[in-house]
Amino acid sequence: MKRQIASAGPLLRAGACGPLALAIVIWLALLSSTASAGSGSAAKLIADLGFPESDVGFLLVDLGSGAILAEQAPDQPFMPASVAKLATAYAVAQNLGLDYRFTTTLWRRGADVYLQGGGDPVLTANDLQALAQQLRAAKADGTGAKFYYDDRLMTARSEVSASQPVPTPYNAGFGPLNVDFNRVEVTWSRTKAGKLIFQVHTIADGLILPCDWITFAPAPGDLLRGAPFVYAGDGTVDRWQYFRLLPPHGDTFLPVRGTSLHTALVFRQLALAAGVALPAPEPGHVPVSAIEIGHVDSPPLSEIVGGLLRYSNNGEAELIGLAASHRLTGRTLSLAESSQALSLWLEARLPAIDWQGFQLENHSGLSSKSRISPRQMIGLLALIAGEPTLMATLPPREEDGAIADAVRASGARPIIGKSGTMDFARALAGFFPARDGRPLAFAIFIFDAGRRAQLDATLDRRIPDPSPAAQLWAGRARTLDNALLRSWMAKF
Image 1: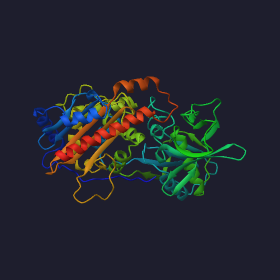
Image 2: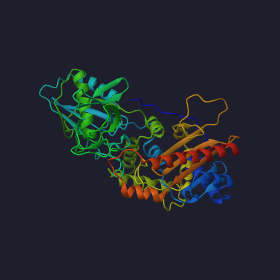
Image 3: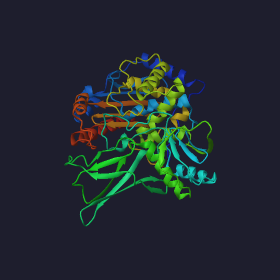
Image 4: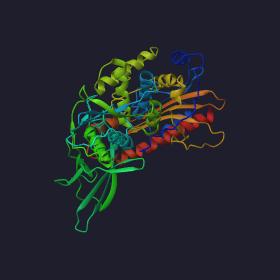
């Protein structure tokens, strides 16, 4: 799987003003600005698309002067979904530095081999293949050896959120050892005798490896038609049960939940291909007397953040957020403690903002409990705008909110930013230049709190796909935020 990012040039330079001072200047100007409530055209768009005004909030600000150009419910908290990753990106960049790299290390004591995880969120089978070559170069042959994986850097987690569907790749496990974004491709076909045969692979650039340790068995009873696969593992070794009436052939992606052992088994397979036969992996800690025989480093954090903001992988966000809170506090924190630590740090960066209602339950936004207001989001965007290197990691977007092609039409105004979608929640935030070149920042939130609460109360975690009602709602929400964005670009 490629480590790719999308980049865009900064729309605003900090100049002689430091990023924090710049954000405070913008925010003080924003506090003193006055603007009318949402325009009649915005109100008509909202009504025409069937949304109550109370479900919609937005803020459009001139970053140079702090003037508010459009607003509605700017202080109402909304669910940010993946737009929360912008807050994570800023906090991580400031606490770790955009040149930070994660390291996965290979050790040996006597004949025993140790694979030690460093929490690399973008480790691939290609990287493990490079480690396997280093193992071979160290003249290890596996004879009489034991093979251990050390994942004590942090507590490995079997999923990002316990309130989300289980069989979805966006809710995979994560921990010190990860590979190929902790998802596997599953294909199946039915034999003439009627038996379903499953094949599982992890996929990297030019490298597809079977994962025979992930097994499938028919469910003991009929599953719901909307729940083709149910997890039956223990969080260490992944096992799945399948719906007996699956189509005769098909394919899908499933999350890896037992990430540490899975990564070790992928490495063992690659070591064998390199000529070193290792025994079955066991959990263990690297002893003090071990010697390093190899390591691989991740790309710099700037590339990781760029990929995160473009592809929105939730496990990546959690891992870099945990690394940042560890650097900030010097402690290994739980996910909730880590989110609180970075949230308090963010609030301290802009003490002039009223942070009432602000809450980030995790670093990815995959939570129905997280909340942020349009005004708070603009404050965070002002901080980001003062960091040109971080601005360069924001992916370009078309006026309709889709990720832009690499080649733009001559004269097209770039939009950069982040979108987020969960059932009955939609968010879009970022930057675009006015026609005269002024940098503008926007934050749009659409959230049906009542229907979301009802969904959370009745959620069947076996069902991966959103309901038709949620899909229709999401389509209308995308139409609305795209229309608002187009109207602002036409006006300013």
